[in-house]
Image (cartoon, rainbow, N blue to C red; front, side, top):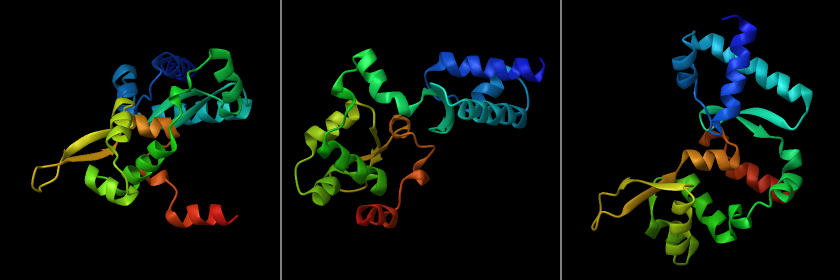
Length: 176
């Protein structure tokens, strides 16, 4: 398989996947060195970015995914009549931020920070698969520990949790 054919196949795999594909999955199908796959992906990412069209290839959630250009999100939502259920409420965003920055933590810790009961919000985030149960705390009653998911990374377009803004960055943005 030549380089052009390999790159085209990777592009097609990203198109049909609908989910981020990691390098191991691509390597398993293509049976070529990971470095060659990475070169092809970097070329595709640059080519899509340069074309400034309706699609992009991004590194998201420890994988690669073909996505629509965020510049067209509003019109695409209108076109597809997307339900507003994709939107997160302020309590959900607040809870999700607490989990993202302090994970793993138990519901009582979330509620202590928020100052209100969080049963409904946590259930909603679990249903949307933005948080998951990652274990149980060694404490009386063995309460469930919560953490973020791969879907969380996808939802916010993050490669990993290190891409979350720091508190310093957030306070700088608020001051601006």
